[in-house]
Length: 621
Image (tube, rainbow, N blue to C red):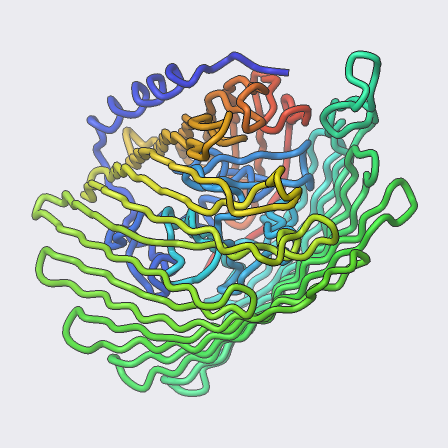
């Protein structure tokens, strides 16, 4: 199925036409107090970041009424989402046109993802447990190591301060969706704590319109089976967290997240999975003076999947990742910060599949400098990773910014990145190649932005060249470092308030090209639309708040040969909330109002028009 509702050129033109007149008339201020840590590993105001960054806070998450992390991130600057058939189904994210395994995902500073597949299970992260999300666009390997070729997305679970207070939410929706969450948290003396649980269940819809084979196509297509049934999903999650300040200079905190999912899908070998995502972390912070900050972090991520075909188990995978970090931030002079640290990572695999190697570790050291000289800003970092599989790998970044008195700011940055091969790439029996090298990238970004009392906008252009991409090599019948890619793009964002309406517009153009020799040379990389747009509009009328989200994406191709075309599409979501009382809020949402029929992965269905209703109890300070 291919929707031709929105073509690529008209998408960008329409969104620009909507955004610019409003921006020119903006009258009121926009909040500039957001802080991002994922781009430098230190606290930096968003407007002071030399790399493009964005923060989605808890209030924005609640207002959006998004029911998954993929839905929350869809269409934001530089991001495109591909989903295989609804809630709980495999969801991948492309950041600035890079591969889906070229984005580093962190949960409270702990690296998340499967060491075998090389991907994080974004679909299983419960949005009710999320406090804020940071998005950093562009390579950050010089600070975080492997995977951050496209950028970094960091999810922070809730952190409780102020009075001890509870929160409760119940909801229902289309496809027999039912949801419930509850929690309590707050500060007591020198300490704070929090605990939350959440449950969601949906009967879903038919995930895949695949075929099991017929006379015209004896090998089948899509999911290679025909199972026209509802494919449901269930997720149960819990978070625990707390912290204590022993003195004004010494503080300890810990956090735990566990999400258990059960997902049905269509497939000839497996059609059901039971998954576990678990993140554990603790941090000890020592700040003996305003010039020294020392941080010791320990963490663990478990990614587990039991796969079934009907009621018969067909496989089992579990990867366990241990991480540790020691970091020191030193103020060497006024507006001059030196950061140095060591990261350690140990990946372990347990599986019914017999891997030749089931464990590897990585030890890394990094140094970063940040300085401000009047209107000038400078950031430089270098990192060396010593991995027992592929040896030493060094990456670096350099950024410069100049701020004008009128709020206009120019930025330029260059960076290198790399991605270590996954265990599947290296060791999967009969399909792995233990001689693979890391994928490497070289990137440049030029930006201009204006931060003022009335409105804020940013415009960035970039190029990212990726070498030694891993793909199947027909000459050796194994994966090999044979592909190259060149990705060019531009992003425009504008946020402002006009006549009481809060308006946020994000436009992205990406040109991800295959630069490998052969028949696919200069083709577009698969499953990445060239143009995307997102517009959020919210307005409060006393105790009533209304809102809409417009999402659009241009055409994309589902294969390297660019023969399987998926048409562009646009969707409109409408939101309404009513403050029944200071602590009680009723929310309602209609998603995909015009019931658009579209796909982000060939053969995999997406939800039509949906409805949701929820009641929230959340006392304020």
